[in-house]
Image (cartoon, rainbow, N blue to C red; front, side):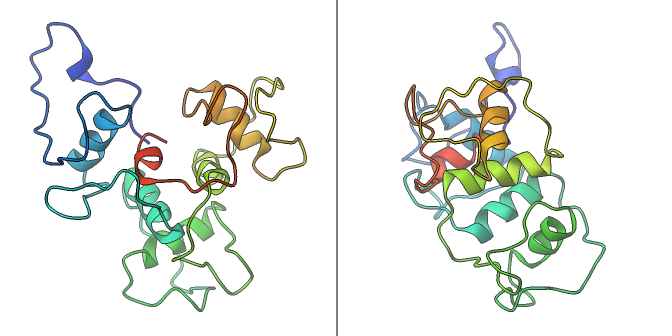
Length: 188
């Protein structure tokens, strides 16, 4: 969701870096610039005034809300919620409606979204890929031993890798069933 670069990274730029309010987001971490960008844009907040909790797990309700905010909080066209576990007034209600009507998610069943279920890296990258219109990857070369062509997330992972969104958990593995934590989701 975060831009690949910004004005703070240009040598000689006159744009001041925003102050980092989080004691657990080191300036040299891979996610620092993304967290500060998302904070500035109103896409995310910390878990408290001075803590972001980068190692904390993300749940489906949080991730769909981050994505919806990053897309400008578009107003859903429908008001009919298909999921019994998404209550009116919840912070993720409009985000889930928007995600369903745009084909970003179909839920975990016909009647449930599972907003409090921890999200996997495969699910998170698939949400993002679908939000971008499910573009075809330009390569069929798969660098990950744990991603098969028959997996629902196959094209999403190839697309994300070739676009620099993720390089995986190591050179040979994407870690599709691993929990997506807060430090990973914001750079996604």
